[in-house]
Length: 545
Image (cartoon, rainbow, N blue to C red; front, side, top):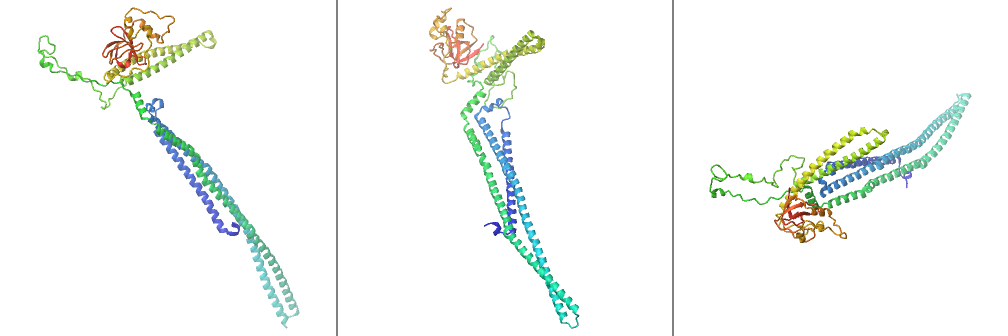
């Protein structure tokens, strides 16, 4: 069954127009859908940009927290997700909107061409029908005229008063009209035969062919429209793997939050170094009552000792939950807690050292260039480098002064940290664990507790040639030449120096600080008896000279 034999023109015209309208409607729908996707992606990108950190990563301490890292990763995944929505919008705009809109125009042109072809064939058939009608009317008119002429000739032939000439003339006229009617009849018959042939060709050949072409066109349009429906889902399926990876990345980001690690990071970033306050001392104001005044008594003119206000003996309290005091930033970072001050000073010192090294390298390069110019004058004037060399030397002197300044501040800050650390450790219920690393090797200088008597002697025998040289030779040199103490320290806990290089000490014992902790957890001290050795740094309360 096909349209050429089962349907009529009006139905096909209405149906094909409806199909093209549906195609245009779908194109419009996809276009608006693409605009929605584009707007959605734009809003997502704006949202991500709004919540991304504004500061550079290296200047943002919050980036060290796993929570912040996971949040940034989550934002990046959302941004990638927005990119996939943009790809969907682009795919819909190109593969559906543009291509189907172009195809719709082609279909409209083809439909117009088929209908024009049908109208031309119908116009030819209509023209043939008009010719048939004209020949039919002419045949009818000639037949009436022939019949009228025959009646006239018969009437004159029977009229006795009519002349022979009139009768002959009437008979000739009747014969002529009869001949004309016969010719009209033949022409009408020929026209009728031609029209029937043309009509049969039109309705059984031309019209079915045109309708079949319209059917083929409409079926192709429907097939293409169905494929367009499929492109809507294909555009989504193409980005599903990437979107799945984005969602998986969001899940990984959520699982990367490490609360314990963040707590340690917070300690590393903002470790204060403040010592916990100790017990307040009892201030006995009743001594004024029991004391007998004398001439030698110090105090007021009437012999009573002067009472000091409690506020003069009490320190300002640092309340943890008090209001935040406004502090003025200082160059030595003294407005910061001890640990933070030490870290910032260390950073500044490292930065100044890097700048100093850079300036010294530049100075060396300028000197070499000057030597080359002096040996080869055609390459350049050596005097032209003098301003740059002078400027570099000025920078080096300035940086050296700054390095010395920051080193002094750093030493003071480290002493504060060590002092506060000792105050805090003195209130521990039990001593902390000694360092896991072994103390520096000082066997050649006999610093262990078992050789204390030998230490009091003036000198030591040098090691034999076959004996292994100790690793820490700098400590041997320091032990061989007695040095002055750099500070004092108090033993917070008892320590039994049982390993080589260590020295024993009792809780509360006063010691001389000979060498600070170099980062391995051990400090070299000297006992009053003269024995020297290493003890755990965490077991001491240190006061530098």
